[in-house]
Amino acid sequence: MKWILLPSLLLVAAYPSGGRPQHERMPNQPAPSGTSTPFFVRLSPGLKAVPPGGSVWLNCSHSCPLPVRSSLHTQLRQGNTLRGSGWVSYQLLDVRAWESKVRCVVTCAGETREAIARITAYKRPRNVILEPPVLVGHKYTLRCYVTHVFPVGFLVVSLRRGGQVVHFESLERFTGLDLANVTLTHVMRAGPNDLWQPLTCHARLSLDGLVVRSSSAPVMLKVLALSPASKALASASIAALVGILLAVGAVCVRRYLAVQTPL
Ligand SMILES: *[C@@H]1O[C@H](CO)[C@@H](O)[C@H](O)[C@H]1NC(C)=O
Ligand SMILES: *[C@@H]1O[C@H](CO)[C@@H](O)[C@H](O)[C@H]1NC(C)=O
Image (cartoon, rainbow, N blue to C red; front, side, top):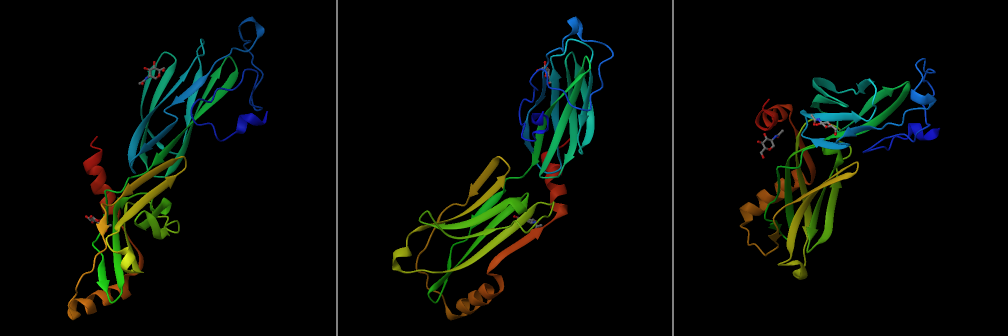
């Protein structure tokens, strides 16, 4: 009976008839005509993405013709509930974990079945902006801003020149639960062949089963004449900023939610 514990049930989890969880008591009210009642349990949607801190409704329905015991198992905070014949709709509040599993368990004529749904909290970057490259000596400094993104630990930011990746950074070491602004800075040596090639910056959020991509408008690499003063300034800021810079703010989440999810 190992199929009972498969964690990968995403949409409809109806156990084959005859399957029973081991903890089940023998029914003291026998099913009609002595056989187990075939029924399904469905939890929909099976996969739902919400903004961090948002809420979601999940509908647990079943085909049991008899009165049932039905319950929702989740670590998320529950809000309102709506009921109809053969279904219960549950509101879940303040989704912050990037992934939460929710189980609906229904017992029909002594037999227990369940369905599983996954809720993902993510926020597509509000902006991906690549600044015009700054030329210092024979090197260009590229700076890309990715703003208001979540969860930052699943983010990869890459720079492409003429479609080819020239640099990328994965932010998996950052595990914060807030919206973040990310600045990627990269210094690149450019030869004559690189001129007039479009440069773009790409942000990719790879969530389990869900990939969210955003990219910047292209900018062109061209020869810029800099005054000595601005050269000095630019090299100072390169020294300070090569790499990834992360700004995280809870304030910003609250502001975002106030705008996005008025209740
Ligand atoms: C829940 O699902 C059932 C069965 O699909 C449907 O009849 C019912 O209208 C749904 N309820 C809500 C609130 O969506
Ligand atoms: C992120 O950037 C936006 C502007 O794009 C700014 O309003 C916000 O305060 C920044 N948040 C943090 C945490 O730095």
